Image 1: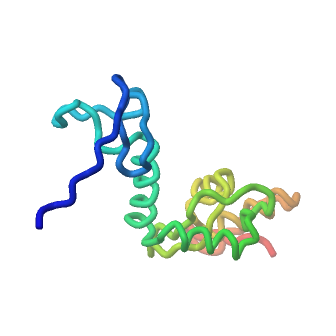
Image 2 (image 1 turned 180 degrees about the horizontal axis):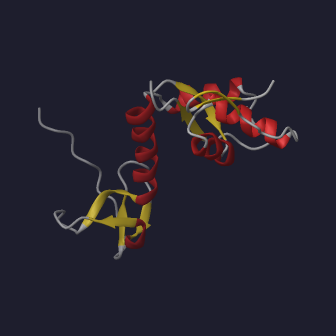
Length: 147
């Protein structure tokens, strides 16, 4: 027994069949690949993007798409910080790599810009609530927030 023979598909000139999604698409929907006999990638751009997202989640966070989707469902489909926007960015601790949840772009960016520092977030909250931040020097180079 040999390898199974693929069914011959009639593909118009300027198009190619994607073996992943099974669709015939124009050459503009394919990335270039200089080493391929036809000069095009083996998967269409859309299929490569799906695989790229899956690989990114697994490589960076150790998550599958199903696990990420379950986290979003557990959060009722909302960002756990603003409770308003769709959660699309996996948030993780940069020191331990532990995944904390899935946030919207703005909230994920905000806590990242605050250095993932809970004290900085508390100071920001105090500032927004109108409490002036007047540190008290308790030792050389050591400041404490007023209570």
